[in-house]
Image (tube, rainbow over all chains, first blue to last red; front, side, top):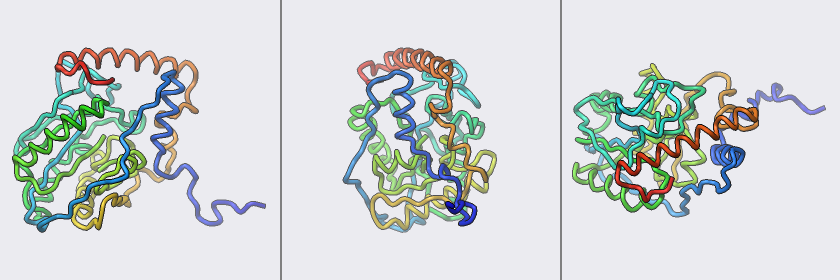
Amino acid sequence: MQPSDDEFGFVPEHDRPIPYLQRIRDYYLTLGYGTPYRWAQYADVPFQALTKSLKDSTVALITTAAPYQPDKGDQGPGARYNSSAKFYKVYSGDTSADHDVRISHVGYDRIHTTAEDMNTWFPLPAMRRLQAKGRFGRIARHFHGAPTNRSHRTTLDVDCPEILMRCRADAVDAAILVAN
Amino acid sequence: MGCAKDIVETVGVPRFLFSDFPLGNAAGKPRDVGSQDFTLALALDVLESAIGPRTTVQSPLRWTASADWKLDFSNVAKMSPEEIARRRAEFDAQKEVAKDRRIQDGVSNAAS
């Protein structure tokens, strides 16, 4: 007889990171869309070690969330996918102010989360708390919004250089990108 | 910081703090400041300590005791034909909306 998972304390087989690439591919093929999305994929990945202590570093926040636009339909919590709330150009915000940024324009998990707490995708308040405790030097003057427009060319040739330029203008040492 | 491990690792990034949470919670659990601060602190640890590109660190936090939520996201095996048809109609409608938005933003040449 096959030993049971319980005997070894194993968890169920599906208790592993969700295989999103396969799940999404199967999803759109089943819906009837013939050409699967081609995800970005690189063999060589850049890496830059910090050149100074984190306590002396300026850290930027980059988000895929969109500024709340009252005239663009339901943007949550619990909103259905809302592509009218998308944005197609890099935007920036003053990190000394509070912001209302939403994720109704991207494919988050609408069954198991409701997007009711912005802090789960936009950790600016958490950055303030940890910076105040001395965990890192400074929050960069601006955070930046990265468009999610599914055009690799626009992402690579327009949006990424624009965000890099804006980070450099704020003398940023490191950036945290929170993807959704 | 992210929740889609296979996607981020396929793209390839210098450092990755992976939270095994439903998409939309890369910075911690809702209404749980302790989880949010812990998650960001871990991301800062990774920023500081990674020894090279593609360093992935998995947060020890769990979304729920049960892992059954992982079976639901975009899982066609769990959908009826009616549900699939409804989703297709909804997606087509959203694509049209997105097309209009790109034109408004002056980027009408971008792919869908």
